[in-house]
Structure formats: C-alpha cells, structure tokens
Length: 117
Length: 109
Image (cartoon, rainbow over all chains, first blue to last red; front, side, top):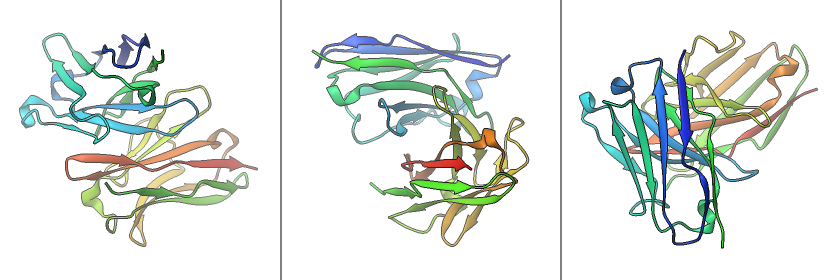
C-alpha cells in the first residue's frame, strides 16, 4: 500500500523555524519526483517547491514567496522527504502536503502549520 | 510569475457534461506545461486526476478526461455524478516552477 505521511507541523511564533517530514512507503521513493504544496485555511493550493530524483539530476526549485527561507531535501536511504522552514511568517500558516508527482500522483494527508504569536 | 486562471465556479446537471479550463497569463498552455488536474472534496486531501495533459491514474474515473483546448488546459467531465461535486485545481509548469490555478468549485445540481 502506498503511503505518504507528513509530520512535524504545529504552532510556531513568527520568525521561528520548523522542519516537516514526509515518510514514503509502497513505491520506489528514490525514483520519485516530489513536491511540497500548501493550502492556507479556506483557500486554494500553493506550490512551494519540488525536488527531482537523483537519477534525473536532483534539481530543487522553489516558489518565490519561500525562496531563501525554505529548504527541501530528501534521504532516499530512509524514504524521507523534508521541508526545513525558517523565518516563518503568519502568511505561512497552512496545511502542508507532500506529493509524489508525475505518473505516481500520490498525496499525503497533510500537516498543519500555524504561525502565530 | 504567471497567473493561472480557472473558472471560479461551474454547475452541471447529473449526467451532463462540463469542461473546466486552465489558462496562463504568460502564454498559451501546451503540453510542455505538463498540466495536472486535482480534485478536492471538503475535509479531504486533494487527489490527482490527470497528469501531463491527458494521462489518467488508475483511480481516475473514466468520465474524466484531460486535453488542450483553445490555448488552455481542459478537464472534461462527461456524465457527471453527485460525487463529482468538489473543488478542482490545475497546476502548470513554467520552467523550473509550477503554478496552481485558483480552483473551480463544481456543483452537480
């Protein structure tokens, strides 16, 4: 059974940091192109960034609002995807999803990040 | 950054056909933008329906199809069912980045 399970969300003060994790199982994670996407409460989806599989070069791209503050990484030996979030702002409050994109199409259930003083 | 536009809301009758579109402010949407379509029901995580313009996943109902139409990506629902009432989001690629549309709220009524 395919699973993507995000963890690490919670309440953090503005300016703080948080690291989200995404545990993958049931598919060949090392071949997967992975995305992080977020959804503010009651709003639409926002693309945060992607990391390509190492066999395809391992490139990482970010959306402009998070570039320089967020870092995506992966550990293929552990089937894990990470999102390090620094200098958090109130507008970063959202449910964060990891996705295995392209022909996989798998989504996690999401983890809520709340940035508030 | 390009703005990706979708119809804010659409209504379709049960058994009817509806087409949702996804356009870009930057340029005509083609296959090189690798359009995706996602469905989200209230309280649930989204799920992927279509990838790379017109490819379906094993779980995608046959009544959904993806295409390019008039310079936009399109999602056509033929034979709408009550359970198709949901929000639909498109995602298109612009170089190394990707942009979501604002979503279409589809009502089956």
